[in-house]
Length: 338
Ligand SMILES: Cc1cc2nc3c(=O)[nH]c(=O)nc-3n(C[C@H](O)[C@H](O)[C@H](O)COP(=O)(O)OP(=O)(O)OC[C@H]3O[C@@H](n4cnc5c(N)ncnc54)[C@H](O)[C@@H]3O)c2cc1C
Image (cartoon, rainbow, N blue to C red; front, side):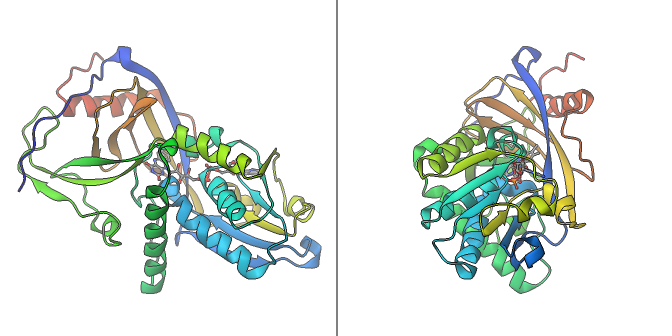
């Protein structure tokens, strides 16, 4: 057991509330779908590569899945063929960047730009949450390789991207997920006799992981894609015919929830999340208790949250967000005015 000094306490009073936000995690039974298919002449004879199903960890694993998708594009098409990436969330952006870095011409077509997607709502802590790893040992090993590649890619980014390492404190009674640490990318938790945060003296555990300041991360990703020659177009893809009509012979599908109807994938399902954003407070640590978490993001102190499976409403619910606040206030021994 290790003892650590008491750390700074956040001020969770009402005057520090900025706003409530919500979003839908694009989950998929069976986990990620990253595979290629050759479409027939009626669908434009295109190579279609799928890259979706990132659930609660798209920011964490975007770069790893982008490498997989880009490798499939290279394996099945010639390098001078231009690519159309569908979707401009973190998955579309990282995929576009990897393709550009491999020398491809890339156009990104999306209904909403990256700064307006669920990707910008994400916290984002590096943890493989809200996603199925896979049923077979081969599939789990494949997923672990993606996790490893993702961490290496995030660690290799320069400071502009807003990725840093932070300690994560969890009460001893918080749900534990040993599988998050099985891949060896982050060290498993160390037990603590007393947590250095919170009002009550209680045992807990600590580990260190990456934290991604998502609004900045997405802005820099977009700038990098543009700098490398990527072109953005705002458009809705409403049916398969829209894909057949695209000029590019190669298409990568990063449409997240959009894949459910467009590609008739019944395995895709939503998981609603809500967050309370408070004025930024540079605490230097993360408090984590399952989906109840607190992140010191540079633009906001982020209080989460929830994982409401099957609920596809993106807008936040005031009563639920108040409940999130109450939970965090109780943990830090602060009064709830309501
Ligand atoms: C509250 C909350 C907290 C989260 N916290 C974390 C976290 O701490 N760490 C983490 O790693 N992840 C976290 N996530 C999960 C993360 O946000 C997602 O996994 C990730 O954003 C998925 O990225 P994406 O690019 O696949 O999807 P999206 O960001 O949804 O992007 C999809 C893109 O496709 C476009 N699109 C969809 N349909 C169509 C169509 N028919 N035509 C044209 N364009 C279309 C959209 O406009 C958009 O550009 C969180 C999510 C939520 C909601």
